[in-house]
Amino acid sequence: MSIVSPQLLSQRIQQMEESATIKMAQMARDLAAKGHDVISLSLGEPDFDTPEHIKEAAKKALDEGFTKYTPVPGLVELRKAIQTKFKRDNDLDFEVNQIVVSNGAKQSIANICMSLLDEGDEVIILAPFWVSYSAIVELAGGKPVLVSAGIEDDYKVRPEQVANAITDRTKIVLFSSPCNPTGSVYTADELKGLADVVAQHEGVHIISDEIYEYINFTGKHVSIGAFENVKDRTITVNGFSKGFAMTGWRLGYLGAPASIAKACAKIQGQFTSGATAFGQKAAAHALLSDMSPSYKMREAFLQRRDMVIDLLSAIPGMKVNQPQGAFYIFPDISAYFGKTTPQGTIIQSSDDFCEYLLNQAYVATVTGSAFGADKCFRISYAASEEELRESAKRIAAAVADLT
Image (tube, rainbow, N blue to C red; front, side):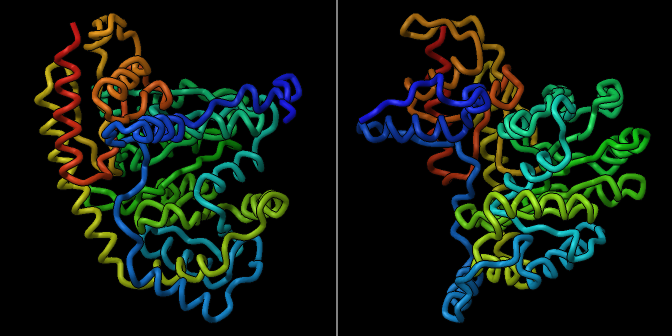
């Protein structure tokens, strides 16, 4: 078997970081394959099954022959359902031709970046940020500019920080709310402050990733695109993975100014074409039918959040806030830096800490460095209460062994 020399691979792929969440999940699977009892809290995936009525809609679509190619930007039926959802839930007005359905929200973000960015254009990313943002920006030729907030600010960036980061090369401001990895949710006033900053700079667009919209504990989700002064420069990204427990269906979408939507469809037409036909039929049904399963998931996540906060807050040195959405806790673990493991290794970073937890406690988490916050690490509480309690017990024991 021939071996491809690394020199034959493009600089693009050699310089690209591997997804930290996927890497940690694989490391956990490798340990489990060796017989270890590993609890994985690394992937951002609801542990619930897709609601039955959505699965039945997909089966019905299959039986009716929806197995052919779809229009690149998505079935009109689904785009009309998304149009209704945007107006109903987000106070956003989009025409059908302003909506593009993709193979996941990740592809939507990639389509946007490839449509808007030229080499060297800057993208302000509010940090902590989802691991793929910077990699996607770099792949599209852009330069990530990280603007960060710590736990003392509930991990939410202030408008003046964004204002200070904007240059004549800034093309996009990119963020998520509710946020992955922190679970933080920007309030209406906070979003208005960000909108007012961007509105002063013609040519700067906002990408608002709202994939966790339905896992929001504040009572009301707010979309930054609803503010009049940025509505024509905001691209709203969403999907079905989190709120409908449809991760494996690979369905996301965006609403954008018509010229950008057309460009995204053009890009997609050369890469993947349209998303799966019967999945789109089921997704349209999901948006316009019974939402109670999504609300029940949200309540379950809220109960778990409170439990995990209590458990982690009892561990000496673990600094925990109270996130208002998603299904993550993002503790500050800098108190453990400089401490020594039983094996004699000094914990110098979140990478070291997460590797220690995996090998010592058999609990898989994700290092904060992957999210632009090396003092922290991410725990997904999309797991059973039994697993979460056992994980906290193991983490507490592992931390107690540090000297």
